Length: 287
Image (cartoon, rainbow, N blue to C red; front, side, top):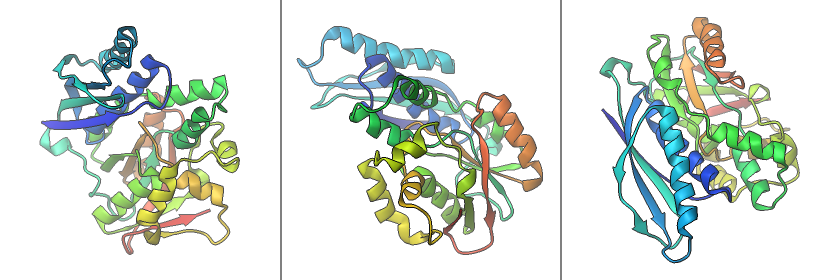
């Protein structure tokens, strides 16, 4: 049995989109360990007297839509009065013991695959400044509401050794978890990272969140960057990902087949982004 709880505050103004993103993000924690969700409990926090009942209904509808897509019921929950709007799900999932995948079990020589494109943080910064166009908004919602349901299928593959999802600490933060857990060096190929279509341009124009500063301050000492890496590219490496993709480590001789399976499973942006090597527990970025 796997149990997780995750809370979320609005990144978008549309109530339905907000809660679809929130629910997808919460359910991901089960998928990221190889589990299959079976039910969720909703925990909405609403500032009483400040949000119209119709808006609350739309918020709840968005979460229900994603849970239906995941094939699970919202079996109950509890609402609370909060100073600002939040929404959380407590998600229960199941997984056979031998299929559980952790973020600490990568092996030297493993290939590393990322299943979704990066750039959610810079897109959210552009949304807040009303600078993201309609196409960008569609891409943003599409990626943040794409369930990581491929997780349990990957966990059933013996060649897959470690799994985790990429969320608030960005690709470097969650990649470093893999390196620390295994006691290995993660060689990350920056040019191989999949990006949302407008992510590079937005980052170059200064659309970054405050979280990238905090992320770099927290773990930058354990990252080796090329001396000539542009600042905007470092921003994308520490860009916080709400409802991001899965990081997968697997035997190198099975990597191409596993990557093809991921793409065929509905994750066309998936890419092989590096490898795990014998060495100190840190990340070395190659450009």
